[in-house]
Every structure is written in C-alpha cells, then in structure tokens.
Image 1 (cartoon, one colour):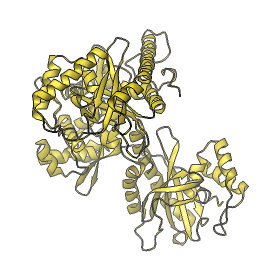
Image 2 (cartoon, helix red, strand yellow):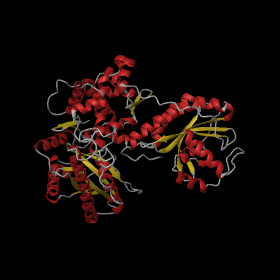
Image 3 (tube, rainbow, N blue to C red):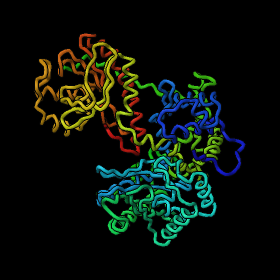
Image 4 (cartoon, rainbow, N blue to C red):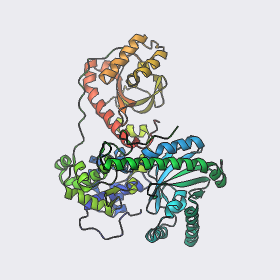
Length: 597
C-alpha cells in the first residue's frame, strides 16, 4: 500500500494517534476486502494489536467505522472526510453541471479528474446507461501513465515529480496498488517510461491527451485541461467511450469540438467565481471573504454560483416528536471510554472535516474557531495532516488536498440505499422484535428496497422488490405527504382507491385528509387498511436538503398491542433509525448519486 508520508523528516509535533489512526483507516479503505479483522490490520500497518484496538474503538464511536462481530467495515459517514475536500475545492458543484451537459450532448460518459501527485484522482462521473457501462467511482485513483488526464498533468511536472513517479513505478511495476485498474502487463520499465513521456510531450504541444486502451482493453478517452484564471491546470475533463462505438481517432474527431466548448464554459465559471471572491475579499460584495466560513461549500451559497450549464384512520393521538440526541463529542467520549478513546485522533478528524465548511485557503485561527479547539491543538493536527500529504500550507492558509479521498471515499461513493439502510434495520429489528423495511415511491406504488424480517415466530412476510399501492401503506402516505401541494393533488387525483379491507380509505376526500394528517404529524400510521390484522408505522428518510427520498417502517400484527402502546414503543426507535439512515445517506449522497436499489 503506498505510504503518503512526505519526504522530509518526521516533525517534532507530529500527533502520533492521528497518524496511526489514518494508517488503519487507509488500510481498511485501500484493501480489496470490505471486512477486516484487527489482527490483519495490525500486520498490514505494522502497529501493535493493542494500538489497532484503540484506534478501532475510537473510529467506531466516531461513526467512521462499523463493527460487525469481530469484523471492521467502513461506515457511510466516513464519506464526510472526502466531502471536506470536494466541498472545499468546489469543482463538483461548479463544473459538474457542464460535464453532465456534455455527456448528454455526446451520449458518452464524461468525467472530471484532478492531479494527486503521480496519480489521477476522479471527482465526478456523468455516466450513460448501457449494458457495457463505463464508470469511475468518485475518489478512485489511477496511475498517471495509464489515463489521458495523466499526460496533461505530467506536462507540468518538475524533476522531483518525475523522480517520485519513477520510484513508484520501480516499487510497483504492475500497478497492484491501484485497485481501479487491472494489473499492467509485464513490460520493460524503459519502454513504459519512453511511451509515457512521448504522450506527455504530445499533450504539452497540442493541449489534448488520448487514452487508447491504456486503462484496460476496449476503453477509450480524450481529455482537455481546465485552467484557472492564472493559467494553472485545475482539473481535466475526459470523454470516455468504448471500441464497440469508436476508434481513438473517431472519438477525438467527434468529441473534441463540444469538449472545447464545455472547457470554455468551465473556465468562464472559474473566472466568475474568482472575480466574486475577489470582490468579497475587498468588501464590495455581501458574504464572507475567501477563507472564512460560509456555511455551505463553494458555489452553494446564494449568489456565489455562476450560471449552471444549459441544459384513513388518522391513527392514535400523536406524541410529541422527541429531539434527536446529538452524537457524543470527543470530550464526552473520552470521559466515557477513558484510555480506550484516542481524543487526539478525534480532534484531527474534526480539523479535516472543518475544511468542508470553508472556501479557499483556511487560516489556523479559522480552523480553531470552527472546531472549537485551542490553536495549538489545531496546529499540531495540521502539521500531522501536512506531513501525511492531506493538506498543504499556502500563503493564504491551509488547503485540503485530493489525497483525502483515499480514506474510503471511492468505496463509499458506490453504496446504494439498501446497503446504507440495512445495518440500521438490523439494529432496529433486534431492538423492537418486529419486521422493518425501507421503500421508495415508484409511480403510484411503493417499492420495497430493503427489509429485515422480525424475530417472532409470526412476522410480516414481504420481500425486497414487492410493490404495494402507496395510498394504503404507511410508507406511501409519508412519501405522498412530502410532495408539494400541487404534486400531491395531481398524484392523489389520478389514484382510484380500492377497498383492500373493510378499513381501507376509498374516497378521494378521505385520502386527501389522511395524507395531509400524515404530513402534519410527521409519521404514517395504517391500521388494517392494506390487510386484515396488519398495523404499520412509518417515518421519512431524508436527503441532505431535508427532502423525503424513502421511508422506513415497522410492521406488526394489530392484535399484539393497543395502538397507543405500539406508538409509544415503536415511534421513538423508528425515528432514531430514520435519523441514522438519513445522516448516512446525506454523507454519501452529497457529491455522489446513490442508487435506490
């Protein structure tokens, strides 16, 4: 596994627990296996088993890892570390719409990538839905010599960069440290270097780079650099296709004109944002100056973004909604767990995440304010993060680097809603001993995308993929209730309710009333309307904007308890579960598209 430590000596103020914690996190994120045992991690990292155990305890309590038996897995909220870079650099929000418009125009996949030392790190991918799909996960790393953007970035390397690249090639000639690409066929190192340097020379002269099956057989791409107003290369945009549709020459001929237009639009967006930041820094525009917190990522604040690219029973009396208990703070966890909790690791991760709420280079004082840490503590974390290659110090402050994406972002960005929700459903079922499910709205129906059966002998038997009428289900009513009034009226107006049981609401007026009541009280309740004896309680699963994208429910036999007893016993843990799923979903989906399953 490549080690990210800088070439200079170890700084005196290095925070050891932070360095060791990130070493364990890298080992979990970069290996081919999803599940890891602490003993294996100790052998991989060279750390003592007791150290790995303390790191794991800390990362699990912070929500970065998840423990299943003796196995450790990445938890969805580890994506917040990569989100910090993506929000701070602003490129996905600012340039992503232009990449998506180009993909639509060409009907080919389009990606944005940035340089990461001698590699290429992908940020976004606008894909096409074909049987032979082409997709790079956001956060994935490729060797510079095996993709088109690499030649564009290497055109600006200095002697140190070239020596670093040669050292990596000598240590790993088959590219085994890059899980996104198949192993390189054996070739003489001199031949590999000569071929790459020739492509670099051509890219420098023409400003265009072509990948003719360098990554793997059949894959083609053509790339152009995107430059900042000062002329520096910010990223590269690539059009990606397959030999079944193009040759390298025909793809270049077809894609290059619209690709140039898209790059011009991207560079205009960068110029507009740069000008706005300069005005803000001089006090000529409202908002915080560059380098201060904005509460949103670059390009998200109002006015900060250049124009985008073209292109029947009401249920029992509701109880007050309980406040969601915030996650314990590092100080609270230290008091609870004592020496088993590495507070300096928690603080270092807080510093890393803080970059996501700040635009541009960040000064030490600002990071200390954002994290609530003493300046000296924040400074030691920054020294450690700089030594490990995750941040860089510039005249205006500290900048988070794309290497942060190696901390699990590529793996987490590919998670689906069922994968995010299922661990929480398992915990809920163990707690309430009833079946639990997640469903999405699909036309006039709900479609089950995740489910865990109850532990009782008699439990509700529904499988993933089952469709049920939204109007007669608790999850359907929650999702219908979240629609705008116009959309809700249109959706309910076209539904013809049927009497599935004697209790089913079958009039449009009655349906309007129960859906409105569901929206007002914040949970759905259906009592024997879908099936005799079946009771169901549901709440919304929301995305980062608060919009309901799914619903989670608990279903049980109506004779097991009174409605009031069921509500009192089930609503609090159900709301807690929905909050946990929503938080995980918001972390993963902030810059990646999450499939519903």
